[in-house]
Image (tube, rainbow, N blue to C red; front, top):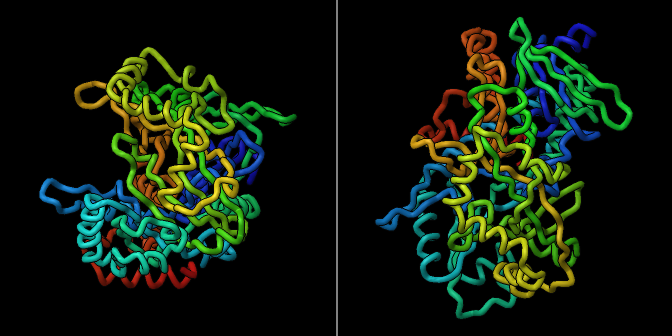
Length: 495
């Protein structure tokens, strides 16, 4: 990249995680002439929320996450959200397939592998719910092949550890989807940034913390970054800014001082896992098994027993155990939350605390629970687990969105949201789950919204349809296109 392009790039990325990597990969694929500069506080890419040990690695496609499907008063189950997430994951599969074919990713097995997705419940009420859920989902082509069973022997064949030592009188049920995936988003991030940096498509300043974002007279954005660990400060002027900094996105958005973001606040939630590395145990389980969250607990607390394949090695994780930390990043500062409070967002934050007292109480209980109590919840999924074979591992930090609703009262949002300036020259991604799994859909939304003037360009349209063969196709209603697309992407990604 020339010195001019480096000093006055077309695009600046703040944060070198999977969201920035995905957006940059898509943008450069659409227009290779664009110059891009990235800033990352840490000394490498993908070390925060994208790092493999900091998330469940579930290729979220709505197969097993029970909080994506709600039961109506008449007993039927609404699968619309699961379908939305499923279609978004298909967009990610499309982008990854394109990047493999273009040589950005040498071996898809370095970041994605087949891993069955399961849901497991017990008790008459939850068994009835899961049966109704399966009936609704398995009838749709997006979830074709999903199996259901109440037979302990069948469930034991799908996930042996979950049935070993279980009370034979306990009523259980499970669904099994063989086409699920385990995704190492850290490895994916390293592959994408590595390709772009090697080929000169992106200049990344590691060990640089962004300390200033402000408008210049010509309406460009001046980005100032302080060097760390002996690196020199850097200042650039960009036409467009993408803030994909995970929990730090709110801080960066506030630094930009755009009116559209003034009332936003963040609610940080920490997480922990129980982790098992014993090959004798790990070899008996190959699935991601999701259960139901306890009554009154938040969506991010849905318990699951997961196979994780990291660096070619298999591990088991169980959790997450939620907690409260005032940090916005795992490597952040204990003052992050307090420094984010302003006169504009203080009241919405206090209102959320008032309206979600049960959530605050739940988080306090999670933080203060004993190791024995923590381990006892694992026994619901793996009755014969031995405590000495599991160790506590700290997961990544998440920051949930706080924003005023239509009545101007602060509300807590469990999801992701794009916040952009009025002229669409700066955009930030806030929130968490399903996060990285739908990164391609998020990147595409940014393109459609903030680069709308380019969307009428025939060259861009042609490239979009090459990258996303399903672009403009409603996979929720076009079964033929869905099946053909799954077959094509599955073959390239080896899943």
